[in-house]
Image: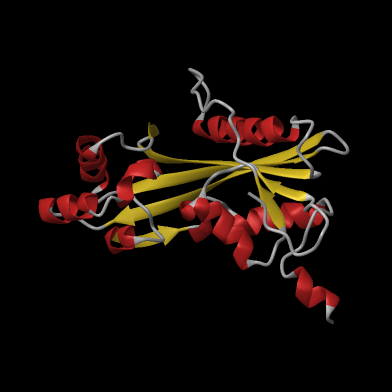
Length: 209
C-alpha cells in the first residue's frame, strides 16, 4: 500500500502496519509508502526494555530496506511496549488477559516506551533512539473494565488500551510525549529525519513560501 503525491515513489517508507503510526505521519504532511515488516518481535533474556524496543525498531526498518524490489531510501521502524514495574505488557490475546492487564494498571502509573529507527539505504547507516512516557490511570471499576473490553479496542494494543481512542477515559495524566503513547515519538522522529536530510514536516508549505 502506497500513498503518493506525485509520480515518483516516495523516498520515505514506514515499515509498519500500524494505522496509528501511519496517521501520525500523514498529519504532518509527509509523503511515504507503507510496507509492513515481517521481522520477528522476539524477546532476548537480559536485554533492557530500551534495548528491546531499539533492537526491534532497527530490525523492522532493516528487514524492509533489505528487500531488493522495494523502492525508497529512508526506512522507518518503530516498536512500542507498555511497562508495569519493568514487566512488558504485550497485546492481550483474549478478554481475560485484557482484564488482567487493565486491573494491574488501574490507579497506578506505568511507562510507555517506544523505539524508533531510520535506515538510510544509500549510506547503510541506521539511526535510532527510544522515548519514555509516564501514564497515570484512574482507579477502574469492574464495570468500566468489562465495558471497555466489550468495545473490542484493547485487543490489538500493547497494554490493552488506546490513549487516542475510547481508552482515553482511563488516563488521568501523562508525563512526556503523547504521540509516544499512541505508538510513535513524532517530535523526536521528525528531528532525526530533518537532521539527516530525509524529510521535514509540511513540505508543501515550504514550497509555497
